[in-house]
Image (cartoon, rainbow, N blue to C red):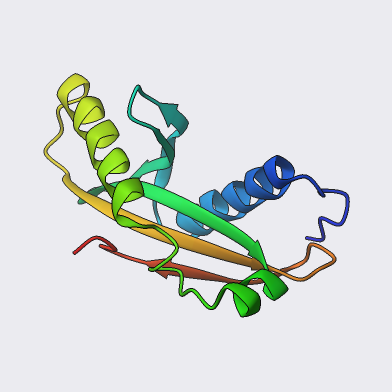
Length: 128
């Protein structure tokens, strides 16, 4: 699916989150919340299957941005961001107890300069 019309940072991010959610659903996860905000920060996607409750950070970048930044998907989520995600997830878990194993994943969506999806990198248990 091409997305050349999405030029703002917000539009590109939203498109990447849509692609990440579709990727999770293809792998048997149900997306139960998007863009959950707290006083600490925001979780892009919360998804679950019968075993896991995922808190997912989505990074969407054009291919040229990866090359110039020199960062891997794992490095794109720094210590402070991880701490904010964990704090927000703890609030969610306090309000929604579950027997599922919580996990923090990162999904990196790479787009061409024209906005076509080049690939999706899914890092499971990214904060371990």
